[in-house]
Length: 167
Image 1: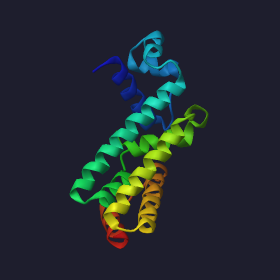
Image 2: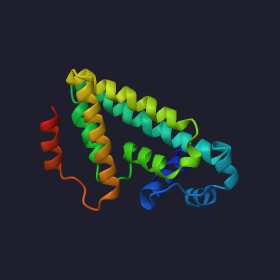
Image 3: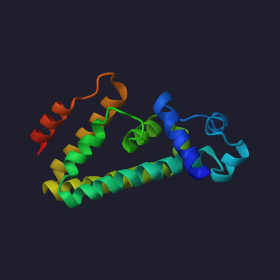
Image 4: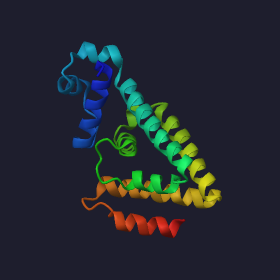
């Protein structure tokens, strides 16, 4: 694993554990790299946030595009949104960063908004109705927030029932 990937993985793990982005000093220490080594890959906190958002958007995009080939975009969107485990879930990473790092977001907000529009378009292609697609996307947004804030995540059964009602 490259030092850059190690730093990103360490940042995602910290976000998962602590619900926020670490300081650059803490991140360098946790990743086992010098602060100079961290700064070589990420010149600022904003650059780190941007890289985390890009990685999360790319991972979610890959999953949804793969799901589109199987006709399972809605199911995949809702599954990703209700994921009870924060660690490794790209949508959870996006949400935590967006909720907790306002000063660091800069242009990354536009990247999240653009990606969300693309994902909603994939849902619309599957369900054949842009209004239903928006509702499904927004339900997924709510499920994601629930999974981040609630000690009791949605069960697989309740997610399946919701999916059946939305389709």
